[in-house]
Amino acid sequence: MDKTQKGKFFEDRAVKYLESIGYKVLLRNYRSKYGEIDIIAETNNVIVFVEVKGRFTEDFGSGEESITKKKIDKIVKTALQFIEENNLQEKDFRFDVVAFKGNQIFHLENAFSLE
Image (cartoon, rainbow, N blue to C red; front, top):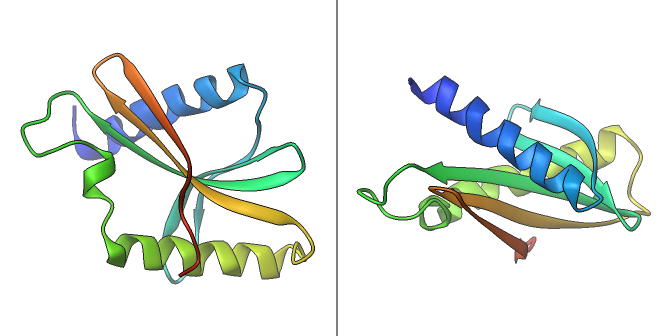
């Protein structure tokens, strides 16, 4: 399985998980000049920008450990562009991480902020 296939595999699992807990998935793989957001969803009138990380093994650390400050900056800039493009400045939003380790799912709400 190549990197693109792995990404889609874990994103598909994340979508199923999020929908199972009541999230409405609005968009997948939103791209801007800054980067990409894996999933944009909504729950309880909050827009949620979701970074998906998955590992079949922990040979290179856990998925959530691979989210660097540089990656967070790209996600935040991309999210702000999405908010502006869609006139969502009045909405609440947050950044979540859905990480997989084998068959385990870890959902980190408010994993990071705009800072």
